[in-house]
Image 1 (cartoon, helix red, strand yellow):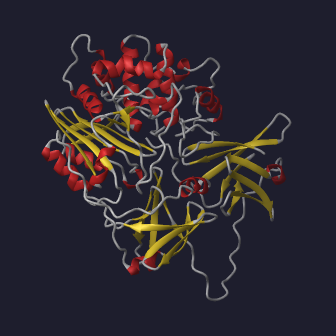
Image 2 (cartoon, one colour):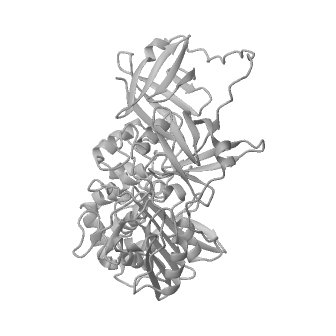
Image 3 (cartoon, rainbow, N blue to C red):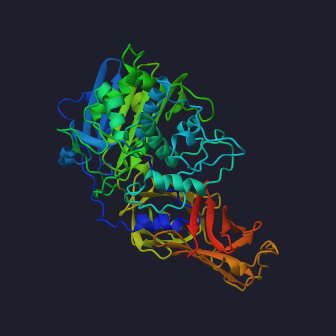
Length: 572
């Protein structure tokens, strides 16, 4: 899983500031990968060593390849001196793969007649919960497990700490945030990955079962499948928690989850635990009494809609077969699990390092499962060409945030408005990367020969727009774009004020020259164009602001609509 919001025009400062604040020592030159442990299979170990050899991430990986009755296992690190970081007794955060386990718990409730995929989500939440609907059509459980609920990725109006985003969330907060959501399409129609919806489902299955999530998981899935080392908060004896890391080698704290919300991504598991889970999915059929295996297999059945999905499984058509897969990513971990049931093959990959900016583990995992998928190679530190550095240097708008790239000798730096300047490394894939946090700058060259770039961070990608060069002579003054006239019933001064979107991040609304402007902390002002009564859109950007009035008619808050998200902010 990856709860970090993709970079967005008005929120770019917040997303970047959170990441840019986490300064750390520069990355060391990668060393040779560690050999596999003595119990590993040589073929898989060799493939793992080849992939990690010299990789700039410094990561340690655990891998398993299941082929019928045969199971190969391997453990490897970029630096052989760090091999003790992982091992058979080490439990990794598996992130969003946890969602497939939550689906299995729901599948068992369905088998027992205690739930149905066509049940409204509202039936599983506390009494009085205001769950949005679209023209009378409710959000059903099938919409949640196929990510077509229409709910945003994260609860609107709730400030999250990027270092530990779910620690303070509880069901009361999640249910309260539902009142701020307005669906723009009928549930079940559009795919939009939602951790918010899955947190609600995590609570829903535990509440319907009459116990807490970890107890339900242990009794309903972990114990029956022999996953003895898997847990949420209570580690079994003899199991140690792996410490997560950023791609620069810096340790990062583990993510915490509310007691009944961990089904969104809070499960930890050893490599052998994940092998047993994969084997349950590959089993041809479940014998009487093997309810957990049957529950896992029910989650793999295709459900109507696009893209193809089971219950929280992504279904990939390849070579006339259907692969079921799910990736995971938390603050310091990456994971991947894929099943090829037709061939009786599966692959498990677990990493103690966050790799979201470079695409995670799916590419390598698919190739292990089926060599028809392209192979991946290590990302090794390299020296950028001087012409590339010169071509990239300049001023840009990164989702509305003024950003400057500078050449400093043989290196490139990035600096967003109001933030520190950070040095970028360069790898042999042709990408730049910050030395202090997990992100990626991918250079692009247009047909005119000019360079631009795409910025990847927190699961999102944003194309930067190069700022126009300064004119060498007096230009003809262009007529300013005119804002659409505001309805006569609203005065611009009514909207002026500060609206906190998150701690330390405020959207300020001001008025000048007969127009409204929105300015987020550390960013430039954006002109607002009237789009109806109490509604405005940002000039040149796909974002809308809807102001809210109290009973006395005065503005009391706003909701920012952008990239499918709706973020509420009260007026301060």
